[in-house]
Image (cartoon, rainbow, N blue to C red; front, side):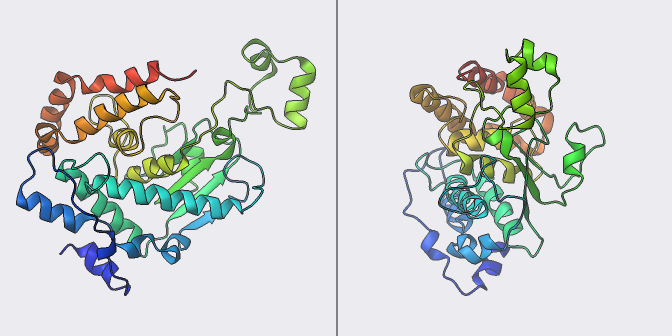
Length: 305
């Protein structure tokens, strides 16, 4: 039994409720794989409300879209998104999602994330408004480089943390551009610029309002494990979001999203690729040789705008 199951089991809640019926296995799963898969399924206690509530939040009263929520507090919505993201994501990596069995390496990542979530280490979700040009960013166990363009935001948050910009989530035009940018790129009149800077901020139709927020939450938590974005190596945060959550939030075409989801799941089942995980150069060559490095570009080509 893995250490994280032992530790969570000590909370007094049966974790077997999370073990779902086995689906049809892919990738030639062995009996050992099946046993590891069962052991990697997150326990129910991991997703109980007290544990979710133990995650610290800062400045998230106006989450998700930089405005007071009508029927619930911003922090309650944030915790709901967190819980839903974990439910779908961990279930997927353990091989119990609709996409079926993935390579056992990903069940191991689910166990690592469960370990971190169950640890006494403080986890923080912090919201800012118009402080960065990223929708969300996570701190890394490897620290933050001084050269990182988001250093000014990240260095204020202790690992593990996620910082979410409610302006970017809500598709709100930044107030940080100069007047010439507003005129030439956004085609705003001077009176609109004045209103945007000093009154109600504008929400242009061509700026994306993020809908699948649980997917975004899980994507960022994957970075807590030290997995970074890359073009030459497998990008796990991107692959997990695409496979486990149905494609990209930036693509509204359901058929295209389905195709991208299937591709991402196929990559996550590739035994040759993941067995090479301890040999970075070999894994890089497999990643490129099989054309997996084209997925991101193909998805960007299908973005709505």
